[in-house]
Every structure is written in C-alpha cells, then in structure tokens.
Length: 238
Ligand code: NJP
Image 1 (tube, helix red, strand yellow):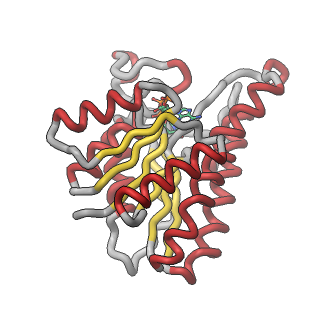
Image 2: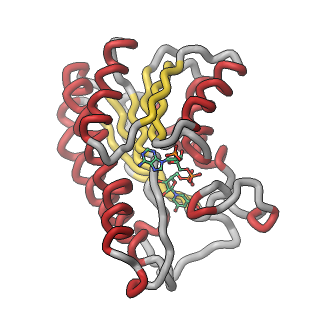
C-alpha cells in the first residue's frame, strides 16, 4: 500500500489495465500517454474510487517532458517505487517499405522512451536504495516474426539488451529491473481494436497486467529478470 508507480502508455490497452490493477493494490499513480485520452483513464479510475492518480500528456521520447513527469511525481508523492515502461508502437511491413521516419519514430518511442524514463527515475531510486523498473517488451525479443516484423522486433531486442544490462548496473543500488514479454494481446496495438472477436484466443490485457503487478510487488529480496507469455494458438519460429 502507498507505493508510487509511474506507468507510461496508460491511455488504453495493457497500460490502462496495469494502472487499474496497481490502483487496486493501493498504489499512488502517475500515468502517461501522448494523447489527451490519458485524462479519461484518470477519470475512469476516479469513478472506481481511486483518487491518487496524476495524469500527464507527455511523449516518452521527449527528454524534457519525461523529466517533468518524474519531477512532478516526486514532488506530489515524495518518492517513486515503480516505473513501468509500457508505451510502445508497432509498424509491420516488409523492410523495403519501411520509411526512415517510421524507423526513427519506432526506435524513439520503443527504445529511447525506455531510456529516458529510466534515466529520469534512477537518481530518485538510487537515493531511496529501492525501486523496480519493468519494461513491457515482447515475446518477439527472443524470436522472429517471419513477415513484416524486422523493425518492431529489432526495437524489442534492443530493449531486452538494455534492461538486462541495466539490471546488473543498478543491482548494487537496491534497484530491480526486468521485462514482461507478451505475444499477441487483444489491444489497440498496431491499429487494432480491443475486443475484436477475431482476437478471442489472444492474451487479454489483464493477463499481462497481472504479470507486471506480480513483478512490481514481489518481495524486495527477489528479482524476476524476464517473464515470457504467448497465447496457446501462437508460436514463433525459434
Ligand atoms: O497497445 P495500445 P498495447 N508517448 O496501442 C501509448 C507491447 N506489446 O497496450 O499515446 C507516450 O493499445 C498510447 O497512448 P496515447 C507494445 O509494444 C503488445 O498492446 O495516448 N505514450 C497507449 O496508451 C507496447 O510496448 C503486443 O495514444 C505513448 C499505449 O501507448 C505495450 O505492449 C504484443 C506513446 C499503447 O496502447 C503496450 O501496448 C507485444 C508515446 N510516444 C508487445 N506512443 C500486442 N498488443 O499484441 C504510444 O509483443 N503511447
């Protein structure tokens, strides 16, 4: 109870469910999205009786905006226990059709976004000698997508490498870092619609949120490096 969590990409999908489940565990939240929809998440949480919620429109790839969010969180709540790097985007097309702008944007959000939020919380977590940093990467960070997945997959490999090395770097400061790696989840991801009947056998947002909450609230002496999960109907070339 009373843990302070920053969650990126909480306007909808997995991030919104992580916010709800952490609120149910008594956490105080700062939630971030790039669109005004993030304030709807705050209203939805308030409607359910959770009023310890700050919402910010911020782009995770923008250093100043992320610094501001982290500072404002520290000022309001006095600490930051948990960072969930969940915001992410995906463009799926064959590599000769990927534009340089799409390449850069996907790396800016999926990789630089994780770097910037992490960099902003680290001084706070170090001074506390405690903190948990979780990134929602992807099950494809170990495997491949046969068609149209090179750009997206490569960002998640990058994040996996970043988080693995980070975990070792910050362990001496009492900080844990790990990844939650889902396969196909029924969300709005990649221009999808959450609740689409065609995705009835895909993982659901609460499946992933439960894994994140488990990792975030695990006993302080325990580190969970990675969790991977995918729907029974999905497998990857390995
Ligand atoms: O996607 P979606 P998911 N700055 O589209 C926000 C990974 N994953 O929940 O910006 C700040 O429903 C956006 O909000 P807004 C995936 O790579 C998924 O599935 O306001 N926020 C929204 O809240 C990602 O890392 C699947 O529109 C930004 C949220 O991000 C994570 O799961 C499979 C932002 C995206 O919600 C959550 O994605 C897999 C920015 N620049 C990994 N850009 C899957 N769904 O199948 C976007 O392997 N957001």
